[in-house]
Image (cartoon, one colour):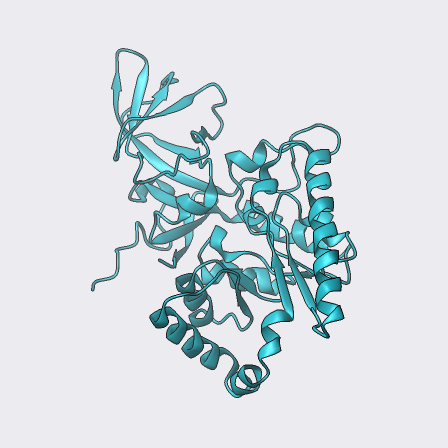
Length: 322
């Protein structure tokens, strides 16, 4: 089967990118990498294992590892395969595997990743209980910082009970891993978690930007670096501009995207292929618009490639996992 054609080539001007396209502002993304590395230095006993489901890109995972991450975790087997094939040596699959064909693929991937260690691990089955994954996706988007912290406190209490129950049966739990972009500092400071799994911090989205910090202000630790580039294809008399990004280009489960630099302009879904921007704000046919996705993970899933841009030019074009 033929591979999807990338929307541009390295060196192209952003105006030449075939839209709709998934973009990364490289300067903002690199700033997020540095910020996370700085934050994690405050928790010397805690490792960073970003969730690759946010970006599904081995190149970005390698950058995260180069900035202190021990590896990545993945939610699907396809994502894990992409990471292993992309050179990530430490991949944690944080979801159940049920079907025989997936189990066979998983064992094959583990064999490639760890070679001779695989047999030893299989021979000592308790290794399955030496890692306790405790990612709670719902509480990542609780808006109040105090309420997010309280929710993590409840999780920590349950984790302590679980570890104690395992200990009484002689079963150790060497790694307690979890937490996301909305709560990872609470897990990291709990004294129980020794690994955290924030993923969206690298690229961000509209939904995460609605969270509040301890001062009641919108969170600002990490900047928006992920965008969907779209083109205006018509403008009508009702002060509305139609763009070529609809349901096939944007996931709307967390609401509508925002328009970069246009806080008063609203996006309306107009079907599979189209969106509407109101008011049009003087947009003309052929103009490009940068949309901020409402939810990064499922929006990334809609694309075969991610385009890294800097100062108006394409610097990188990366394939994404299925």
